[in-house]
Image (cartoon, rainbow, N blue to C red; front, side, top):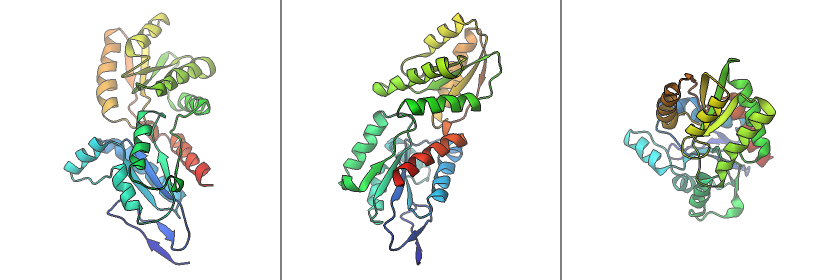
Length: 272
C-alpha cells in the first residue's frame, strides 16, 4: 500500500499514513511552557511516544496558551494555537481526536473546547480524551503511582503542590489528599499555590503531626515557571522559616513513564 509523508508548516511530525485509509488524526493539546528544558523532558517525549504508538495517524500539537505561543515565537520557536493547528489540520481531512493533556477538567478544558468550536469544524468529526484527573479512579491511580514513584524517607512528609483552580475542578486536589491519607500513605499531603488547601493550611497540618522534614513535589504536568518560582523559592522558603528541613523534587508529572502511558491508554480507549 502506498505511503506518503505529511508535513504542514512544521506542525506535524513525519508520519506514515495510508493514502486511502480514513485514519483519525491525533492533536496533542497542552497549556504550553516557555521553559525549554521542561518542554524537552515532558511534551516532546510524550509526543514522540504517541507518534510511535499510533504510527498510522497524523500527529499534531497545539498550545491553549496564546501567551506562551507568542513568547516562543519571539525566540524563533514555532508553536501553534488551537485555532491555527485546526486550520492546518483541515488539509488532512480526517476525524480528529483531541488529546486533552491537562491535569484537571477545568478552565483550560473549557477554553480548549471553545477554541475548537470557533473553528467551525463539525462536532461529529471531533472527539476528546479526558484530562489526566477526571474521576475518582484517576485520583486513586495517581495517588498510588506517586507513592511508588517519590523516593521519600521514612521520616519525611511529602507535600504535593498543585496550581489550584477557581472552579469546581479544584475539588480534585481535596480528593487526592483524602485518597492519600486514607487509602495510600498518610505522610502525603496536597496543597495549592492559588487556592485551597493553601500553604498555611499544609504547614498547620504538618505542625500538628510534629513533622520536621518535608519533601515538596510539584503536582503539575510540567515543572515550568510555577515549580521554579513558587515551589523552589516561595514554598521552600516559608517551610524553612517555619523550622522544617526541606527537599524539593523538581519534575513534572509528564516525566513519569506511568503518566505518559496513562495518556496513551486514554488515546487507545477513544480510538479502538
